Image (cartoon, rainbow, N blue to C red; front, top):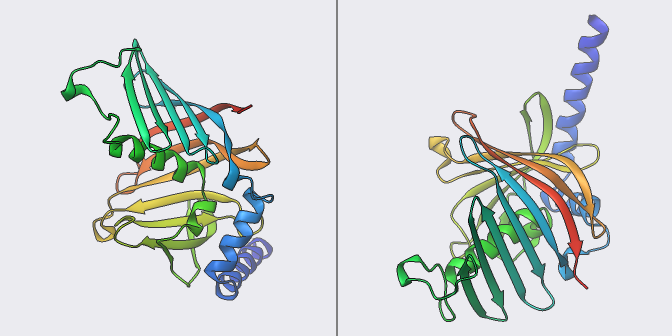
Length: 240
């Protein structure tokens, strides 16, 4: 028991030392080197196939096509008998439901001139599946202090990120394995003092175009730790 307690103490002390020695910029660089060693994200061209499950709902499948060199994004979402297709192509966008593009105005999420709703979805998928690389984007403010925190029994090195007002108002925390620097958890708050927002557990990294991307994302509320749903990356297809 004494030997075990000593090992735990040494482990905690070592992690605290790492957190004090490494800067936030250096920690991010090490994590990006782990997840995207060949800088493949910047020129990503492919389709992610994602199945989302939520309590008391039928599953939703999403086909997310990202083609950064061509400024192209396509999202096909299927749930039950409804299929929606959204396309953003070089500044122009389109929207359809079950193949029908001529839909009532009140049902339309986007049209050829107002692409804001579609851009919101594009930014959502690009941000989540582009982490940690997206933390180098303009408008991201990294706290220089690297913290340490335990989630579900594991201690992590933690980056805190806020954003310029034009980018967003949330406060985010990103949790990295202290040995491999893999990103394994992230968390956000709208108002941290209220303990609102959510945290996401990342599991089972898969190889996608030379990158390591989480296969499974499990979403929980910060306050109640209630499971909201899971996103499962079922497959990936490179664009020709």
